[in-house]
Amino acid sequence: MPAGDPSPGEAREIAAVSEAVSGAAAHTGSLTKRMMVIAAAWIVALLLLGGLALNQAMTNLVSRQFDAELERSLTAMIASTEIDPWGEVFFNRPLGDQRFLVPNSGYYWQISAPGIPTYASNSLWDQELKLRPGQPTEPVFYDSDQLAGARLRMIQRSVQLPGRDVRWQYVVAGSRADLEQQLRQIRSILVWSFAVLGIGLFLMAMLQTWYGLGPLRRIRRAIARIRTAGTNRVTDPLPLEVQPMVEELNALLAHSERQAEEARTHAGNLAHALKTPLTVLTNAASMADPELPGIALREAEVMRRQVDHHLARARAVGRRAVGLSRADVMASAKGVQRAVERLYRDVRFDIAGNHRAEVAAEPQDLDEILGNLIENAAKYGGGSVFVTVDARPGEPLCSIWVEDDGAGIPEEQRGKLFSRGARLDTEKPGTGLGLAIVRDVAEIYGGSVELAESEDLGGLLVELRLPRV
Image 1: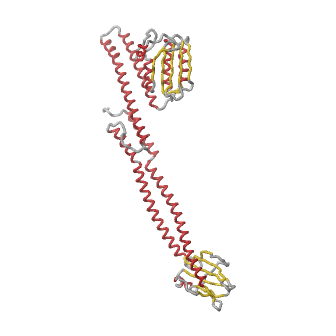
Image 2: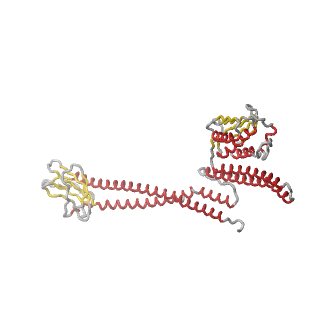
Image 3: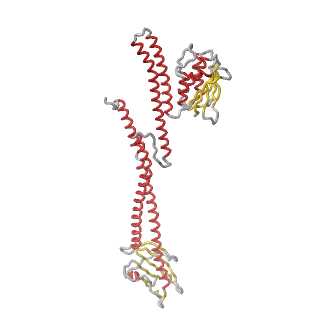
């Protein structure tokens, strides 16, 4: 297989990841498309509602103006009416609107009364308007289709002239064709103006979306530079709204770099630790050393201890990278106590402190840390082990004290215990990796381990500090 080409298993995994990403992209869709659909829906809805409202308002306004014009003609007729000696009506001055003089012009007036000849405008010619029944004393508007080919808007009023007992019916009619023509012109203007306004708003929304999503395109280009050009951070100046996301991305990159560096360091340390035992085995085997079996067992044990140590660190790093972890300190301590009591039945255990304390660590790692500390206290102590959990309100760290009543450790030798394979008591079984693993795992979670002398029991005091949840 050429160098750099993925194995069949890796190729299948890459294909599965690509398919999952493509499926997610197809499911979530385009952010630009979502914003444009929302903008278009709002623009259409608002313009439609606004257009309908404005059309209704303009229709009412034009209709009222048309009715007002008819009412002015009716008022002028009533004011100009007189009765001649024969009882017939006439106008003492002509009406100003010339449309009443042109036959079939669409504008008509008529004055009628029971038993008296009808007085009508020249525009009516030989026709007569049919009136509504009744004698309304106030102007009444209504529509009528009585003339062929013309819909009329009519105003009717009953008036009793001074000195007469007869009630005259005054009617003015105007063709709705003019009114409808005005309304069609207004609606045409509204449609075109709202269409232009809608197109302009949609183009503005497109421009706003393109400009507003510009920082995301810049972030995409910055991430592409990280992959292709070898940069390790997004340093482009970006708006405040996306800056938190960029900071989280940079923090993730820094976290990945730390993990990669830790992995390289572990690999290098493990390789260096295994190099010496392998060299010893190789030399013994090449020289046919008669003590080869014993040398092999001893060096294999050394290599096993090194592998266990680095595996413990690797597991802690991997669990820390999964996300926010939490572990119940008291539950873990009591679980370890039950396990250690089976091995050391004569040891007296006492666990006290905050029963609700939780630390930001995986339960398996906390069990491993406390298991090493409590087992060491039981193994090297004089028969008593005290565990105290101190988690005070407002304190970021939880302190766990493990004390024994053993001989203790001189201060100048305490630092040696954190070295891999270091053991002060070689008569009891062990690997010498317990405290080294405890220190490394605690530091991975941002904690620490310190050794001191127990004031109450006189033996060794181990103070473990871990971040609280």
